[in-house]
Length: 84
Image (cartoon, rainbow, N blue to C red; front, side):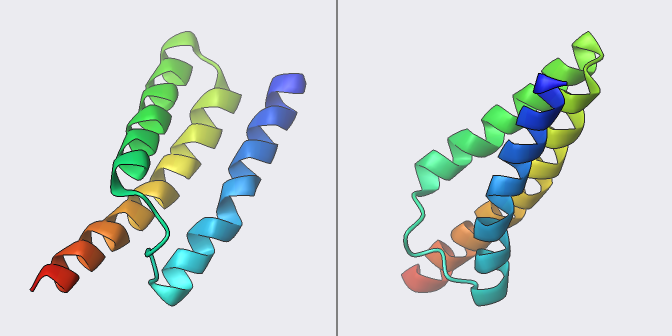
C-alpha cells in the first residue's frame, strides 16, 4: 500500500511540470544533462518494476518516462532551434 501511494504521488508530482512544458514549449530552466539522466533513470526503474513484477513501480515509472521523454524532446528541439 505504501509503495502504491508513493508511486502515485511521485508520478502526480511530475505532471504539472510536464504539462507546463508541453503547453508553453519553454524549457529554458531545464538542464539537458539532468533531464537525460532523469529519463534514463525512470526507464531503468520501469524495467526493474517489470523484472520483479511490481506493478506500482512499473506503471508509475512508465507514465513518468513517457511524459519525461516528451519534455526531453522539447528541450533538444529548443537547443537545436536556438543554435541555428
